[in-house]
Image 1 (cartoon, helix red, strand yellow):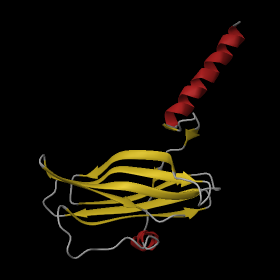
Image 2 (tube, rainbow, N blue to C red):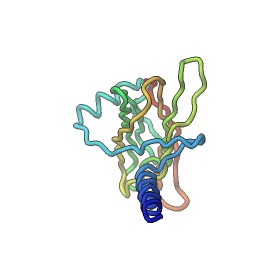
Image 3 (cartoon, one colour):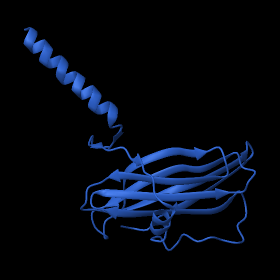
Length: 166
């Protein structure tokens, strides 16, 4: 009886430790990995950002956000996500309200959500995102996001954006 109780305890403890380290879950119950912060050189960051042709700087930006961008690169089973939100100097919060990794099995299929992250901010006027996550290799991926800036309680701005497809 002691062996059964001990074995049950070990199994339960293993499950608790495993689930505690993997916190993103799919609707179908499949455990999905968390993304990790990565350090990129400015050149590596710029090279990934160049993969999204929609990342452009507008010299006539209005509002709180001056520049915003999001891009993704796939390397084997790793997805590398880079993004940037630059705001006017008087904002108190700048970054991403939401970042959603989406996937589809083929170009004729519709996009489905893989992982979602919220509230990625800096208490300054700029925020750079450099993350990686392990993904199944047989799908196409893109990232959608909401760039966010806050000057005060009455003055905020949100801009939707979509990355390139890999």
